[in-house]
Picture 1 (spheres, rainbow, N blue to C red):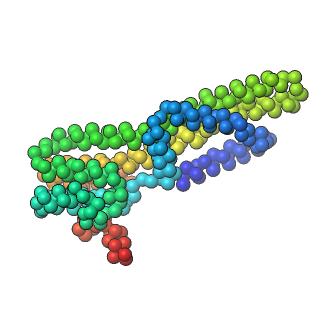
Picture 2 (spheres, rainbow, N blue to C red; picture 1 turned 90 degrees about the vertical axis):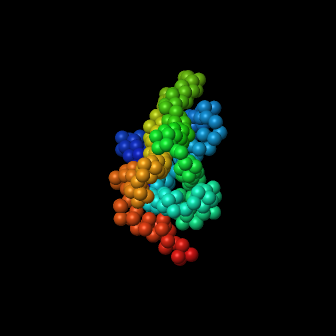
Picture 3 (tube, rainbow, N blue to C red; picture 1 turned 120 degrees about the horizontal axis):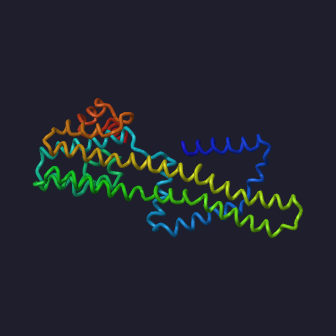
Amino acid sequence: MTIIVGLVITLVCMLGGFMAMGGHVDVIWQPWEYVIICGAAIGTFVVANPMKTIKDCGTASIEAFKNAVPTEKDYIELLALLFFLMRELRNKSRAEMEKIIDAPAESDVFKRLPSVLKNEELTIFICDYFRLIIMGNARTHEIESLMDEEIETVRYDRMKAQHALVAVGDGLPALGIVAAVLGVVKAMGAIDQEPEVLGALIASALVGTFAGIFLSYAVVAPVATKVKTVRGKQLRLYTIVKQSLLAFMNGAMPQVAIEHGRKAISAYERPSINSVEEATMGGGESQAAAAGRQAA
C-alpha cells in the first residue's frame, strides 16, 4: 500500500508542477518511447537472469506491495513453537520427537501454529536443527557455524530478486538515452519540415530521457529497496530460531532460550514478554490461534 501511495504522490507532484509551469501533459505521452525503454529493459532483464530469478522477482514485488513482513502474531507463534519443541525434547523419547520432526504437517504441535507451518523453508530449517540436536554429539559452536552458513545461503537466494531489480533500475537511464537518440534520428529525417513539426519531434525524443530517469529512480529503485526491506525482515525469523536453539544447547531452560530469540527482534516490532509467556504457558498455542480453533 505504501508503494502505491508513494507513486501517486510522485506523479501528482511531478505532473502538477509541470502543468503549473505551463506545460502540456499530452506532450509527455509518447507511447512508442515507453515501448522502446520498457521493452529493452525487459529484454535485458530476461537475458541476465535465469527463469527462477525472473519468477521470484514477480513474487518479491507482490510481497513488497503487500508489505508481507512478519507480524507480532507470527513472532509469538514462532517463539511458542520453539518453546514447545524444546520442552518436549526434554520430556519425550527420541522416537517420539523424531515422529514430530519427520512429519511436521501431521504433528499437532505445528498444526497449532499455522503461520510457521505455512512457511515451508522455515519449517524445514527448524526441523533440520532439532534433528541434529536429537541425534546427539552436536557441539554448539559447530551448529552455530552451520546455521550462519545456511542463513547466509538463504539470504543470498532471497536477495537475488532485489539485485536483479537494482540492475534493471541502473540500466533504465541509459535505455532512456537510447530511446531519445532514436527519436532524434527520426527528427533529423524531418529536418526540412516546419519548425512546429520539428519541435514536436524533438520534444517527443526528449521524453525518452525523462522516462528512463523517472522509471529508474521513482519506480524500480524504490521497489527494489522495499523488496530488500521486506525480505530482510522475513529472514529475521531464521535468526530468532538460531539464537533460541543456541541458548537451549548451552543449557538454558526453554523459557529463557526463547527470550534470547525474542531479543533478536527489532525493538519496535518485538512482542512483549507477557505476550510470549501467555502463548507459551498455553501449551505453545497463541491466544489468537486458540480462539480461531475454538470458533471452528
